[in-house]
Length: 181
Image (cartoon, rainbow, N blue to C red; front, side, top):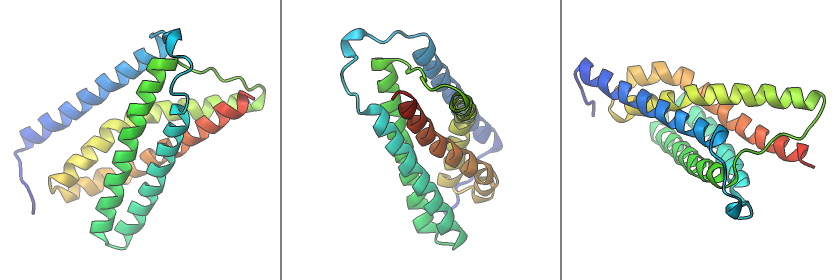
């Protein structure tokens, strides 16, 4: 079933998704770089960073599976994989927000070349996270409203960015915790 909408309503929906993404990004930057985590919660929910890494890893697996299925024209399995990746990413976002609200930012303790590698990966991860969120929302919007030509056009860019963000999220977690030892 294809749903058709006027181009103006498409622009309004896309503008709303971009505005929502910008607001979420601004909130997260405030939470990480301005907000001071209360000391009373410093020893609570310490599993959240590991949960974040797990959700990123599972989202990445679902993205790869979704790509595999779409290349084989298995639309039903593709849709399930991509929706599952979205669910994992949403769980990640909630856990990530809770973690930073409770614990604040964790500083990288590694030295030397690993410090350079860590910050290179982290910076690219952060930049692409801000790009990925609106792209993911728009890609899903096109799919769920039956605009498959537009979905296909943007998904070619969304998938590699989302996959990179998922994989580097796990890598940042691993490097951050390896550097803390």
